[in-house]
Amino acid sequence: MLPLYITSGEPAGIGPDICLSLADRIDERPLVVLADLEMLRQRAQQLKLLVELIEYTGQTTSSEKGQLYVEHVPLKEPVVLGQLNSHNAAYVLEQLRRSAEYAMSGKSVGVATAPVQKSVINDAGIHFSGHTEYYQEFAGVARVVMMLATKTLRVALATTHLPLRAVADAITPERLHQVIDILIHDLKSKFKIEHPHILVCGLNPHAGEGGYLGVEEIEVINPVLESYRAQGINMSLSLPADTLFTPENLTDADAVLAMYHDQGLPVLKSQGFGEAINITLGLPFIRTSVDHGTALSLAGTGLAKSSSLHVAVDLALDLARQ
Image (cartoon, rainbow, N blue to C red; front, top):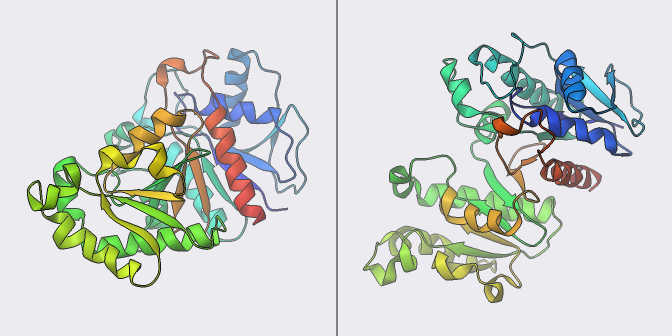
């Protein structure tokens, strides 16, 4: 039974806290947390949690309730709760490197990730725009797609972590074809949806209002969508984002494609924050993640909610079974 790896993320945030909650689970497949062992012991003490931390050396059995497998990744400097330290940026990236290497080499079924703090990694002089882009580069794939999901809604993104002024230029026919191809492929192969129904947001208000509020829908987006509709794909033309997310429209939709980060994700997170998860489509391995940040002020307080991590682990294990 290959394990599922879980990265503990930014050590000064709630990543270690929510990873410790995985000791309450009993899963057929081993869960292995990538973290500094002593840091996790200290955090468990601060949280008054009775967790037996077992250093992972390749066991293939599941842990008992109250136990947690940990692959030791040494910190550079001691952690102060809630205080970012750029000297530990390399520690965070080492978690990502190992998780990607194990997944790519067939030593694991995939990875679920706790949150990282992009700013402190960049403060260390390391260019880092996010998990999604990191795994894309490591896997050497031309394009990946960020998709967030709740129990009733999936939202994929045509662009991810771009400044808003750069979004319109990034919406090209080539990008849209790449994103839609990946979205359709993974909905079919990973989620077992034989004939996916996809709704697509326009870029501009009112989807351009027939060209009066922008021409991207007419000149770029709709011609691409028409090419898929001609192939029999159940896909809308560009729709106004302010009315697309109504219950009536979403009833039969398997996924929504939004043009940029803050177009679709606020709707999804308002519907299921803390229960939503992030899935990276287009990778040659499974990668899921929480839908929230590092919450530095909650680290070590016992107030952090771990539900999103558990849902991310559940989906990764389910995808692995399929």
